Length: 248
Ligand SMILES: Nc1nc2c(ncn2[C@@H]2O[C@H](COP(=O)(O)OP(=O)(O)OP(=O)(O)O)[C@@H](O)[C@H]2O)c(=O)[nH]1
Ligand SMILES: [Mg+2]
Image 1 (cartoon, rainbow, N blue to C red):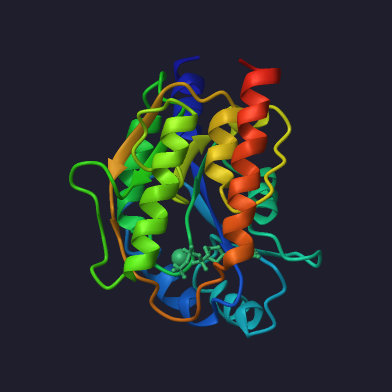
Image 2 (image 1 turned 90 degrees about the horizontal axis):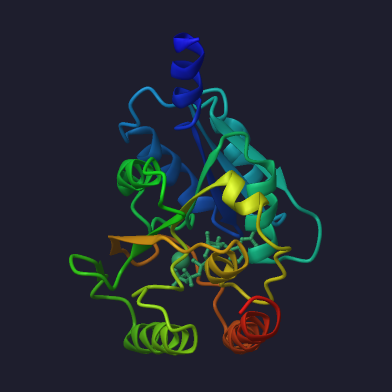
């Protein structure tokens, strides 16, 4: 009996890192290497890349790494490319009870994952956010000024509309229990801000933020464009309506 409880509590800390990828061929190897150097104790984990059929060599690179890193998995999607849908697909296919999601471009430090896992081990924490805007957090000094302003403004709009004290509600670096995700309402994100969608639809009430240093992407180009910014605004309006009309 005691042994079963011990085994179950050990299983509870195993985790999946979901990484959406699109045209990140040059970042895959450094990312996987960096993750492999993090000390996760005796937890089991997997890294699940969800690629939107990049055609830039990503698939071949991942395949060449799987013998060295048996915890590496790849799902290639053939639908129209969509970041949020990719993250959801990753969550649905995660084999472990805790899920971390992060970008592939090394903006998010994988070294912070053990801290996120430690917080998620507390029973009353629903979600942990890697935050640029709490005390101790920072963004790369070389991040373009316009990006900084847009990001801060979008965070301010979100905080005001949702009356939340969360400093970085639009971060893409998150940790959550799979059961919190599966017990939520159906996710229908329009744009990129899957984290916000999850927090609201999965009714995350106890939200923690840990400071991170957000680095500028190492290689490759950003996929952010005006359409995505417009989608963000649409998404926000839809989520506010959801809050007001369906789940006040
Ligand atoms: N599967 C999938 N992944 C995507 C898509 N668009 C972006 N991504 C991935 O989502 C993550 C975030 O995209 P980024 O282009 O880094 O966006 P950003 O962080 O706002 O911009 P920069 O870091 O400044 O380039 C990266 O890992 C991308 O490879 C997509 O359409 N499908
Ligand atoms: Mg990025």
